[in-house]
Amino acid sequence: MTWGERAATRLDEAGFRSGGSRRQVIEVLAAESCALTALEIDRRLESVGRATVYRTLEQLEQLHLVQRVDIGGDAAGYERLDPSHHHHHLVCEDCGRLAPFASDELEAAIEAIGQRSDFAVAAHDVVLRGSCASCAEGDA
Amino acid sequence: MTWGERAATRLDEAGFRSGGSRRQVIEVLAAESCALTALEIDRRLESVGRATVYRTLEQLEQLHLVQRVDIGGDAAGYERLDPSHHHHHLVCEDCGRLAPFASDELEAAIEAIGQRSDFAVAAHDVVLRGSCASCAEGDA
DNA sequence: CTGCTTTTTGAGAATCATTCTCATTATCTG
DNA sequence: CAGATAATGAGAATGATTCTCAAAAAGCAG
View 1 (cartoon, each protein chain N blue to C red):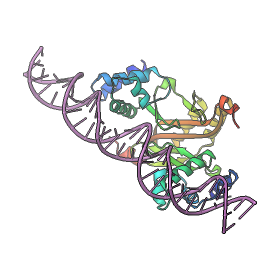
View 2: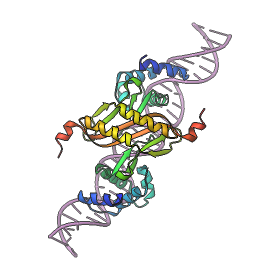
View 3: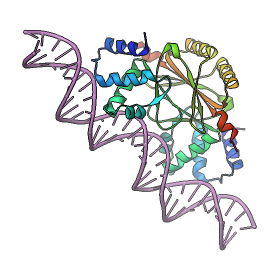
View 4: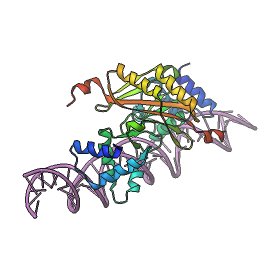
């Protein structure tokens, strides 16, 4: 089952009606594997209102179908939460470039922390910041 | 050497002049061990302008004396970057409560990722989201 | 200490992302 | 199809952050 299908199913189960605008937002997220800004999504969807984009992202986030990630800049990034594509981000502080990575070791450590805390951990977010290869070269 | 002293030294080395407003912002950050919002700092410093607070936070962030953390809400959090108090955060998605934690296992995993990437990793940020004990109780 | 140059600062305007309002339109149910 | 209710879009409202610019302070040379 693809992420898009799962999203549709979950929304249905949660009692949402199926509107065309929400579907379009989901399609954009489904097509992109890494983080997108709410306004980027809005710009790609000429006929969909900004409010709807934000609303949909909020709904998807609450259903844990989408995750909000802070990628340094001014706007928040959103990306689909897909168990089979779970990853985190390296952000270049100079050029803003974004690179995904995954690590079982890291996931295990996070799992362990969740266990021994008194929080019911539902999601996590890891961001490493630094200079990417090309920016490090040109550095002073 | 305390964090406040180190911050003063680094700023001096970086060629900044010593103004009273910047010092006050540093004092607030030095006194707080966890994340503060720019506006919270501004509110505590009656005589310091908003612009100065933001400017100072930006300068401190670039010198890696302060770290910006995304604690879910609308505003960004800032906290001092102190090797001897290194920690990350658990955020309650219901009430917004913030709890710090630390894990050597986690740090080791992050270190390893940095090694094998082509980024020069300068900082990292881990946020776990979920429900805190008291919110989980009252859940539907 | 005095004058000069450069940085720091504060007040308020400007910007930009995000949220809200509300009238309109679309869905679902029977 | 009709009624009830959710989804949507346009634009206003909000709130955080950034910008502008003139006044005040800091560092420095004489």
